[in-house]
Length: 160
Image (cartoon, rainbow, N blue to C red; front, side, top):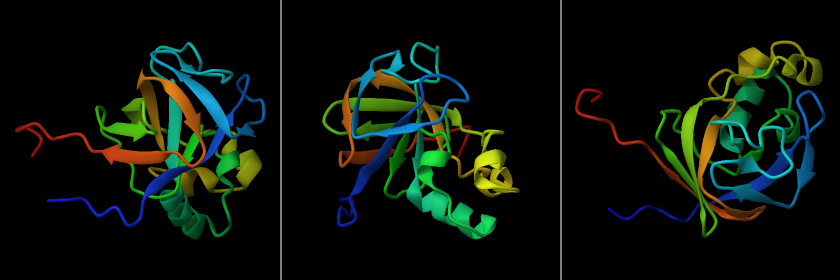
């Protein structure tokens, strides 16, 4: 069965922070290093938390629960994609552009700093909607506008 490609998923924003607790800053492009992380980001060089990814579609649901707008730049996630429900199972893949391949490690729990920036109950609204933590299996240049393909993890017979 051929996938419907009329609503292409793309990277809409990229954010990095030089250290924990420092503000995120938007960039138009960045370098994703295989097995290391995004150059210039606080997670660069960590073992499994190379990059975080969130979906605007899931943020819109969180906004309804929160009762106000949620700026993707304030969620402390690195990459925001235009649409799609992210598979939170370890092993799911996210392909970005021509070369980048990410592997989901786990669900990204909403950060405690969100209450300060987004207001009361932001963490509750973002629960299970705050994106995923990934490791970089194949690096490359990441840019806004890059095409994104979401590849869910296949269940094993014991998980079905």
